[in-house]
Length: 272
Image (spheres, rainbow, N blue to C red):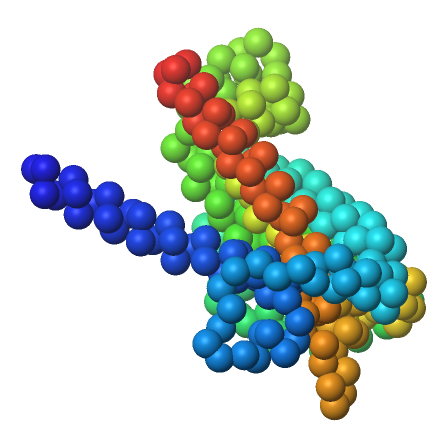
């Protein structure tokens, strides 16, 4: 048992180091010059060029403008997905209606199609609506997704007791009252994960904003950072410094949501 415990801890430590090393390497490269990045053997300790690299990022792109654009789009997408996906997932889990199984199968089928297949049809629709170049084209098509509905449906099916819903109906609760006052408090751990997952996906999205946005003042961070790459020459230390600045908010979000996620699960376990 002692040997097994030691092996387990060694394996967990190795996995932790492998997971953390890319972030450490990102920070190291952001403090170095481009020549240092190409040097061999690689320099594994921090340099002194972080301030210079960050200042060049601010000189070449409107970083804070792109930051606020990305924050607005990611927050709006996450909020809409949480509402619509939790509503649909709760309905699929706890209510019976005609065509329920067929609709759910069709929903799962959409998850198997690559997202790239929908780029051209989506762009045509946005052009017909006159939304090309606007934030609406980034937010509205992503306000619900099949994965979020499936995730909430699976969680609600096991976690929301049908007896609790029946008691709410006896007390005169309608559908939205059951959803808001009964289901949502129980679904908080699932919603925490889905909100963080959606926010990170919208924050890191590059291809769709690159296609749909035409005004530089509306660029998101990923599109703005991509413009730092030159056609013939790239200052990778500057690009990596910009990437580091873009990653920091996601790390803060992860730390906050993971703490909330664990506390919600612990609270649910104590109540049960």
